[in-house]
Image (tube, rainbow, N blue to C red; front, side, top):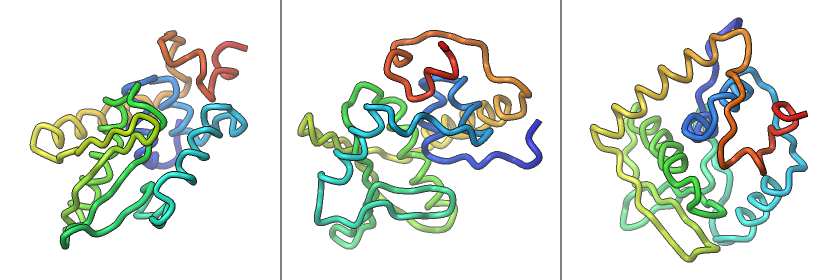
Length: 168
């Protein structure tokens, strides 16, 4: 059982729609394999894309890939390797926008897929806020468990940075 409430970050929000087991690891401060090829590739893409922007901006428990102003508006952007997990990425960025909104800061959000030359706006609307609240409740329920979620193989398992915790 956790001694304190888990920090709900964008990474945890992204994980909730991919793998509940990964959510448990994240909320219990169990780190993924930092030498995982996909994690390293993601870092390289992040570092080499949009080089003129200031990367890794911290806000509370969250770390934005980058932020800038455009036409007087604050814009939060997340750089992704691919759109394969787009639903999860939308949740992550919506979480950032929601956290900013709670502090009275209005921002726009964009998912950037440099390898696909694609850019997608993420809008924080009432439906998205409701989805986030439901996911926060789900994350808290997973985090309160004393053991990880049961194994449930999905299309992301093969290259997951947590795979040795599940399949060793």
